[in-house]
Length: 230
Image (cartoon, rainbow, N blue to C red; front, top):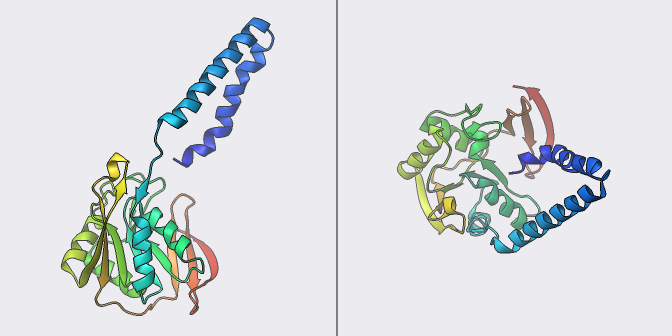
């Protein structure tokens, strides 16, 4: 929903243009004023008529990981994974932990979905290699895969249920958004967790055609960022 913001200047321009012509006639200007007042009142009434959307559960998952993880990195995968990132930042203002997102590490796309989708892992071995490189101990996933056809996200869930992982906690998601009802957050612990072996993280950014590389220091802070072409 944030992408339409780019069109707001054009929308406001076209919305204002009629008044430039209506002001030449008092009658038309009066009619236009009445129309604007009616539309404004309708919009305000809709604000109070529609209940605000909410979703609960990601805050509990973030608190659990922060209180149990011995590793400075956590892996999250799901349609609403950004909510988990938000609460990790809210409860960890010193940013002592890195959050790796499945839709940046396993796959990446420009605007989500299948459009310009790039898959960066194909097998359980690829997933385990990522966990080992970045010292992943805890993995947080939505119990259902809603990744619009990228098979690696479903393969991740199958691997978590059959590989060297333990399901430590399951948190029901509470929401009044239909597509989120009935979902659960599963928190797994990687039983073969290893220390971080890679001192930098690469994130592909298809929208701008670059890869961003952040170097990790021992104090868990981003040292510097560099950019290179994909």
